[in-house]
Length: 183
Image (cartoon, rainbow, N blue to C red):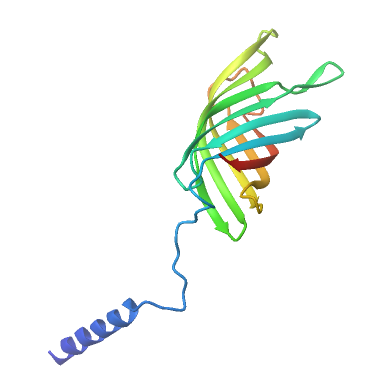
């Protein structure tokens, strides 16, 4: 019986001591970025001399905000061979702030979109446009400027899950420069 009382006393005191708040440890909170204002972003990039242009919109700068995007990639030909295909993509996403400290932020925007790829050569050798419903993800690393604008890099990835005529790559990714401003 004494062993049970001793065990109960040890568990009670150890539980109380572990439950005490450690004041030297910072309290972890969900990262937020700037204010809850909506933001409009402009993207610009190059891939093998093909121009990439885009516009993104986030309804707020907090995690869980909805948004949308539009992306256009021009084609690039080398000796009449298509090196980069003309691509247009638009859709929606959800903003997830993964990291926000001082002036830097790491964001993730998973979503879905419609991607149109021009002049896809099919199995018969003829060309036609392909329209895909694709899952998308956008990774961004941005730095906040003094006037509440953001500047950084953004990587767009989208996957071809259902059209075998397009062939490889089954996914595509585009790295671009991004400038965001509150609206």
